[in-house]
Length: 350
Image (cartoon, rainbow, N blue to C red; front, side):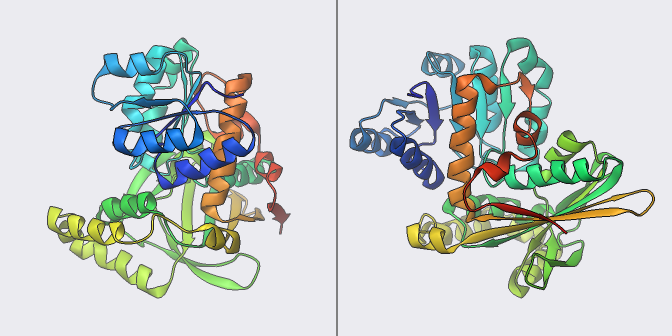
């Protein structure tokens, strides 16, 4: 069952959660990645097929995508892997999924829409916590207020980041923020805005961040003005503001390498107990030109646990024929209520 789904970057933290979930269902995904040393023990442990290959040679890529229906790319930072793998998938007639939250990746894959349509291939980046719950929430709010012209989304994640997430944050810390204005992406200073948001237990101070929905929610809803906020402690807010002035220093090779070494010294990600204790809380509000608003909240499980659930579910659905050719977002294919299929998730209209 589901032995034609290839998980690339299979030795990564989130990928191993997805593999564990697949195994409990009796599935046999194909494990893949660059490192034979890391992949072979994992494949032997679970008695799964394994393919070792990098992304540099198109011929090697094509050879290793033979017999595959769906690629689920878990190898971040996705700015290095997504575009090359998506191009190879289009050439091979294989559907492409990943778990990115990087705006640049969403935008790059959106430009491949026509090529993917012609090849009958679906491209769906962001099949995890980035951006399934927020994308479904955005689509639900658009359904509540069809003439909405502005969308604000926010989330509060109770837990700690994995190596991959932390590395991506470090690599982008000095690049500023991003919002959507009149349908166009606009670069703004880091921490350009703060906002008090009630996720259900009283007001929490949040920080405007360059989250993936600034790209994807526009595709899903057509709303032309979009901002995304994240609940942030004082230290993180200070660092975000400081990066406006220290950007060149933070982006230097020396500082980047130092920060990444510190990340590598920590755990790969939250353990099972921490994932069980963690939770995620989302909030969204739309507004139309007349000043009418609609507000909704979404509560769900810890982010990495949710990513395993949603990414694997989308991979199965895609392999079973649910794919729609072209660049797609989760809510466009599976609907605004898709997120409600997962245990521990509840949505409230305020």
